[in-house]
Image (cartoon, rainbow, N blue to C red; front, side, top):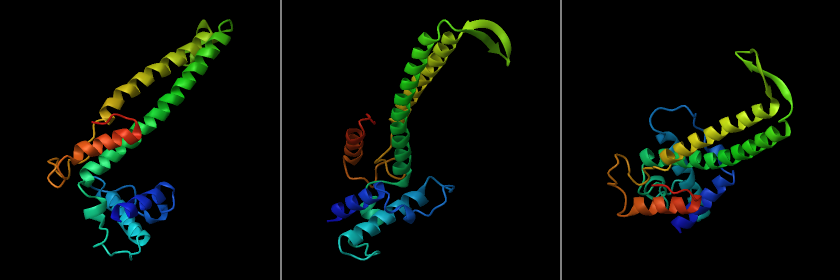
Length: 191
């Protein structure tokens, strides 16, 4: 019952139905505890309503003991940021590759069009417009490689390490199972 309520509450948040319940300023002290606990409280209270209980009847679904179970803001919050950035980078790289292909196509199309090259905002030497477009494609391609380098950093997460990194309040095996599940549902190999 608790899991069912939590899952349904999370689905409502994903669908944008509870966004008004998140009233915190984005500028906060600490490591995101206010934001994480706000999320836990919204999820718990909505889960309570969905399972026929009143908000605040935490013996049935508690923000900390059920929703935040085996986690801490110190691991959940940075993990969420890593996941968000990693997923965003997948979309970014896909868009960048389309742009590179477009620049390369224009590079071929404009290969015979001469123009004045520019450097330091002044005329330099002649070049083809095609070379300029190919150059832009090459430069963006280099950035795709840099984003790939960042991917390895983002794939390292501390979910399940709990407050001080010792897994002291996590169930045995929780970090490994949580990371495997997160990898399965995102398609990104987290460690």
